[in-house]
Length: 467
Ligand SMILES: O=C(O)CCC(=O)C(=O)O
Ligand SMILES: [Fe+2]
Image (cartoon, rainbow, N blue to C red):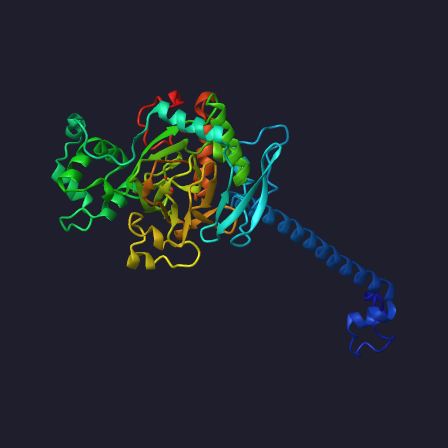
């Protein structure tokens, strides 16, 4: 057998009789003599690469699609205004949490101080809303309430009865003090934060309205007797108190007087907030100052740190927190009468004074220094003012406390002053607010309204006996 016979391809590889010649590389051979096979292989290789490429592109597209979907979903959970596409399944009503994901808190634009915008709050009437300051964002709306509405609110408050906003010594109730098992000295010691043996105004202030060494529950008991006694023992006068007024709370939910319900609806329109947030806020607080009454400058709501709970959502909080504040995002203040003398609402640092200067001038003292406040609003019957106590977080939710929202009631020099406060409570922690709303939505119908957890003066469960 020749080489030729043994190797069928030999004829392709070398001419006959030249077995010693080196074989050419197979590729060269193919390209020269098997061009059809060569191009088919090339085609196959190209097609394989092509398919792998297409497959990779499709896989990449799927990956991008699904991973951005997940990001959206988690953004929806973290940022209330972030996701407008995550909806409940069709045919199923959205749960409160799903509803909340779509909520963005609209803020009314101030444009500039003095800017007037028309607002439609009641059918057939247009109100004018004037920007009073940008820091805080503060507006005034004349004739927000009619004369008749002002009268009804004052009368309902009188019918209900007003209590001292900050109590001084009155009769008895020794038992409550005993229950606490704290002597007046011990109470004083707890409130005397800097331990200098004196009870300064700011210490009373701190305890009354922001965070307190005592729990809120203990403080409520104190205010009935023991607290007043040691204030008197230390020679504290009414004028030295943080506030010198009387107040009560009026329920505005279902079954409440129509005027009260109307006011709530109007507030919802004015603030452009979701009705549920207004519905679940504190009842209306009505305040009366007699001649000589005042309210030193304060914040309606404190700063919120990670360890701070909001009073209204504390039931929904997973953990217990050492501090609590009322998380009043907005204050709407109504003047129910025109005051004969004094009684302006002062905003000591509005717009152009830094907060630090407050300490130098003691602008907190509205009995002495109201005249030095940057801005004062004269109480005029029916007028409403409203402002934001918190800034925006930039993503459509509640941000940090606005320190320019400091305000107080100047001393009433002639006559009586009646105001009402509508506070809108929103937890800066979006998740907590969502959990709270979900919890409330699971309550039976007659329990899921304002005042369930929010009225700071109400300790008994009979809150729905409110007017
Ligand atoms: O009486 C005023 O003008 C202000 C009232 C106030 O700030 C309040 O009740 O929190
Ligand atoms: Fe206030």
